[in-house]
Amino acid sequence: MRNPGVPLVIASLLFSQAHVSAGGDAEGKANLAGTGSALPSGKGLAARYPDDEGIAADDAVIFAEGFEQGAIGEGWGEVNNPAGKVLSFAPPEVAGLGKRCLQVEAHLGQDTGGGLVRWFEPGNAVHVRFYTRFDPTCDYTHHYVGLKGNKGLQGADKWSGFGQAGTKPEGDDRFTTRIEPWGNNGEWRPPGRWNFYSYWHEMEKGPDGKYWGNQFGVPAAPDIPRGQWICVEFMLKHNNPGQPDGEQAFWIDGQLQGHWKGINWRKAENLKANALALESYVTERWTKSPVNRVWFDNVVVASAYIGPVVPK
Ligand SMILES: [Ca+2]
Image (cartoon, rainbow, N blue to C red):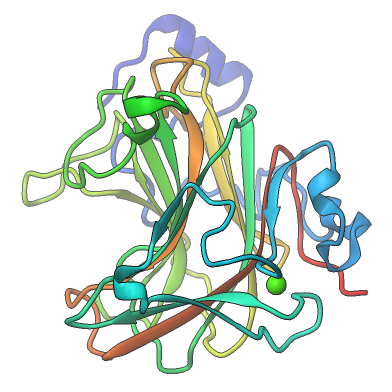
């Protein structure tokens, strides 16, 4: 059990924030969605830009990607496309998403899927909105889309939040959070239900003695449907170093589904959620299906709530 100093206790009382201590909140007991959350739902800044056209110029938007032009990975900082077989463009076949989307195909025994990484300078809060669709035969994914907190945007600093699965961050080096489907060890129909999978310096050790991502879950949520586009948005709010006042939240199709406050993401001001990993990572640990196909489109990173695409 964490033992915060007196000033932190007072701060917690003032802001009525439950401090999410070690271990996350897999059961959703501290989830504020539907009870104590003041976060918006429904339409957001995207409503001013039908089909997301011109959204990149909005003052709150850091970058936007609809995959309508250019080669695979163009404009992104890192491309993970093993043997050139994992990433391709495909038609989204729905109004509002244009003519192309990104397809990620993971082949069991050959590769573990792949994706794209883009670095950016974030604000205090980072909102990431993307559309995704799971093929009707897509099995469980091992990891999905996430934000990585790195020490900076140059040299080795931009990689400080990558890798190092199974170990606890120090607090001045990295933190990560992913919005991903969770199958509850096969209990929920693939790909599962949305949850956060997070690494930070107050995370809890797993039963095997290693530090695996701690979950922030919504067990009562419906299973993620396959074969249809879903609007996913998630938000990470940085804490002030020394105070457990960070947050994270996610929305599905514009409805707030999870919101947690009181997270002590980092100890250092320069450590920021400055890289988006748009990816589908698939392994034999969770999956039997030989080919696991998902699609992404209309990615927007912003400092404010984005909301779903409003079709023209
Ligand atoms: Ca598109």
